[in-house]
Picture 1 (cartoon, rainbow, N blue to C red):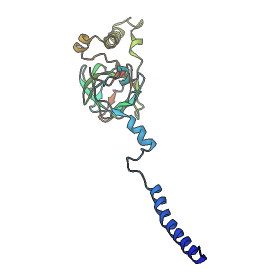
Picture 2: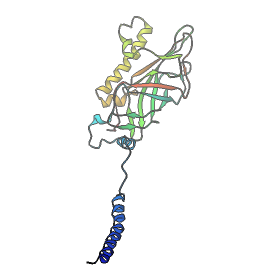
Picture 3: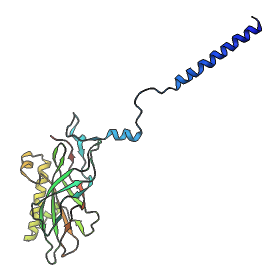
Picture 4: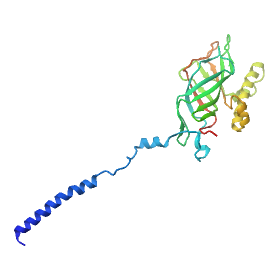
Length: 246
């Protein structure tokens, strides 16, 4: 072949190569259609699921909020030792979600209903005491029994939790005053036993529904205890809370 013809053929091949290459490269760089991969934080959020009251074939332990879990609540009613009477109802709302170890959780804003089980005004030189019993926590799928106690009153240094109720019934019935405290403590312990043994009849009949009595005490003598509406309490679960309705 003559040199002039060879040059023409080479030029044609070069032009064809240059024309094809951008298409090949462009095809390799086109993104594949489909859902984008979630970021690590998004993936973690997707593992959390709001409790809906159903087990979905999972074991009951999957829905357990562990004993010892602490969480903040807000008082929806004013409480104190001057006006309220025993058995008077009150409500609090959770300020934090309650989470089971499996990622299933109950959102904040759940309402917990309780009642005042015992009141001791300060009097002249005494110390004001207030026993609170938490009966149930209300969810979108129904009411659940809850066993909890007050462990602190954030922001109010004049109020503190008293001793655990079980300790009050050991060797403290020497007089009428101590006998009254022992009786109140015994009622709380008996109610807890009802929940532990899952006695449905006892749970249905008892207003406390196995709730553990929380004991608040005014640190200064002669002063009445007062917890205004909106005050925060820190609660601790004494028994597992199962986020399932059965």
